[in-house]
Image 1 (tube, rainbow, N blue to C red):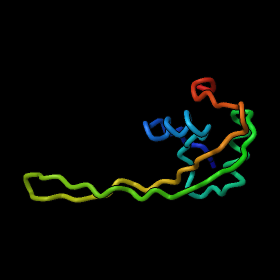
Image 2: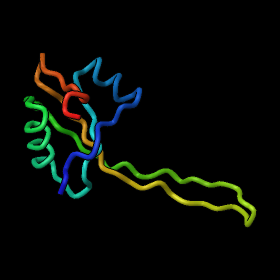
Image 3: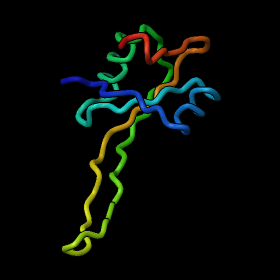
Image 4: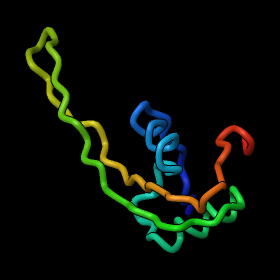
Amino acid sequence: MEILQKPILTEKASLLTEKTNRFTFKVNPKANKLQIKQAIEQMYGVNIVSLNTMVVVGKTKTRNTKSGLVSGRSPKYKKAIVTLKEGETIDYYANI
């Protein structure tokens, strides 16, 4: 099971990084906090102070087609917000 899927690089996430040294990742929905913490510490070599997780519910989307109104939902996912020790940082592009 691959625990870390990808970093979340949105404006809101980058604002969190700049102000409070917190980094955001999209993770496997079945992973728990201990597994996520181990994966991040091993991959990036950092010390984690705290870890918050949340399940983000997918948005409802609708569109008009020839056959009428079609509605659906984008998939839900699990998000992890990691607070690092003072002075440490994560470079997302170093491990590509």
